Image (cartoon, rainbow, N blue to C red; front, side):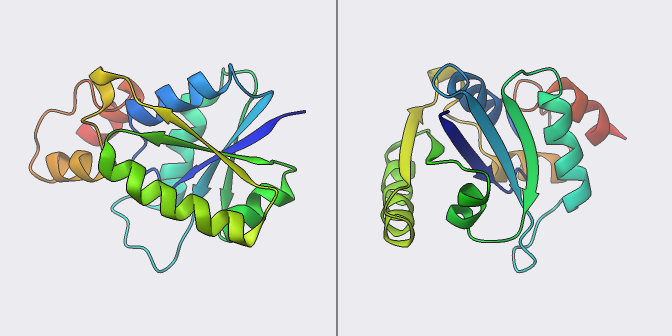
Length: 155
């Protein structure tokens, strides 16, 4: 069984993240979305809120599981018998950054393979950091995050 982990803080999850997971389900038998709970990382939204949003996004997706984690990503993947890490690329900067992470993960676990999917053009401008900034200044998040999250953010 081919199992991949798609890991991130998802602060918040965006339509770009969802696209990568959905495309990943065509390549893997199972995609585990790992919601990183990192106490040293400053997030805008609570761990519980981020986890609930991600779970809501994939509740009807066969082959997708959502799990929180607070260990090294390669160790989390190993715990779930995953041998692939799924990553999305929006631009050249992402490629450079993700290449470094891929190499360190291979150093930590030589059996771990990273698979990169290039985001579609219509989603390549979306990042969680931009979403957080737009949210802070009460700008429109239409087309950046799922509808369910939009309604939560409007409250």
